[in-house]
Length: 307
Ligand code: CUA
Image (cartoon, rainbow, N blue to C red; front, side, top):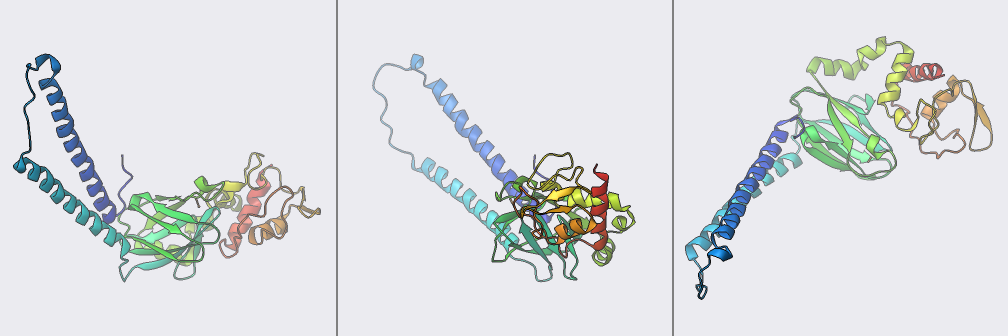
């Protein structure tokens, strides 16, 4: 019933959790069992007439049911404290990746300047430290497979670390309600072997380079957050639908209009507030520095296919 275990920390959290569950089951059975058996044993129909015996206490019994739970609680405390300290103290050799949350996507910046959106690549078996912040409201970076979660707060940095042990992909959720598309604010963690990771850092994904433009554009559309606001079936979302948009006159918020061509699409991706479509809020984040030239071309080609 628990998510996959992506790290040693996940295993430690789980073992404490499972211990608590079985401890609870154990005491439930004892307490409920004794309750039931006393109800049966001392039921009304069997009680003898006469006064109820006067019972004071039993020192040995009282010490037992105080001391044993105390010892168990001390064990639970140190067990939990150990996991908490472990999750809070980042190893010195951890690789640092900058994470920015914004409505409604996650962006990642790697030590060499490579960036990615909604997909975090990490090398297997090496501790990774994420430095989180937000451009707008409070988001929360939740990685269930690693049993870690940390708020991304505008105007400050927070930290989170994990040591990926198993190949992904591992799902990332936003765990702080942040607006209309909060539930779509998802990313994936891909755990690569060393060579694949280095290659990915240097040149981006090789498969993506070989992909035909329109196909690449579809992938960008689906994985980089476009789909969160722009439908492809004509349904109005946070942003205009992409269906049949190519080549049409688009009325703008300032009363002018623009023909949807390559330059307009490119401008809207890099400077979304430059020409806002009539009837929509200027809420789109910029993708400046987040998409490669070929990826922008891909999106343009993909739009052409949405008749
Ligand atoms: Cu970002 Cu919820």
